[in-house]
Amino acid sequence: MMQETRKQGLLSANARAQVGASGLALAGSPTEVLTTNAGQAALDIQAIQYGSQLRRNNMRDQAAISRFSGRQAKIAGYIDGASALTSGMSKMYDPSRTEYDPSRAVIFGLSPFA
Image (cartoon, rainbow, N blue to C red; front, side):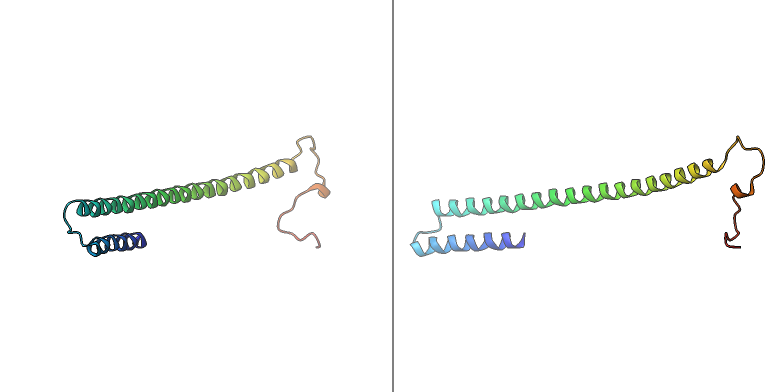
């Protein structure tokens, strides 16, 4: 942005120097050309600013989408984990077996090597 402003200032100064070197007075056509050039330079700078704002807004939107996707993935991970836990626990229960079989019993808190 600053580079474009500096570039336009240098171009404007160069145009004024050329008009002065040619011996023409700064009235009439030379003045109109310089004014038109200055107006066009201002429009160019505004176009650059607008493009920068669009890029900035797009980046912010992409960041928001990425954050949302991350939160959704985190929640999906919790749900998958809970589903696996529930599934595993339900497989441990066998309603067809009524007698106690110590080899199939699940005992929490004891070492299997004891």
